[in-house]
Image: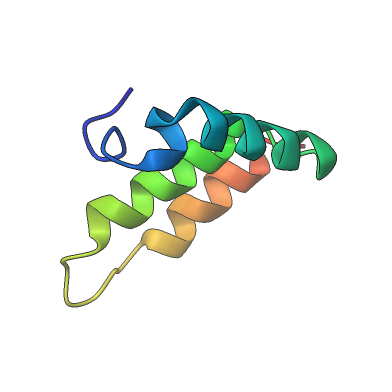
Length: 65
C-alpha cells in the first residue's frame, strides 16, 4: 500500500474497508481504481494548482472500461 494512503481508516480499519469494498462492488468500481484516485488527490493536495490532475483522473477512469 502506498504511503500516501496507508494512514486512512478506509484502508486500515477492517470494518471500514469491508464497507468500502461493498460500495465499490455495488457501483462497479474496482477498489484499486478508488485507491489510485485517492492517491493522486493526496499527492497533489499541497500544491497551489493541481495542474494535470484531471488528466491523471481520466487515465485511471479509462482503465475501468
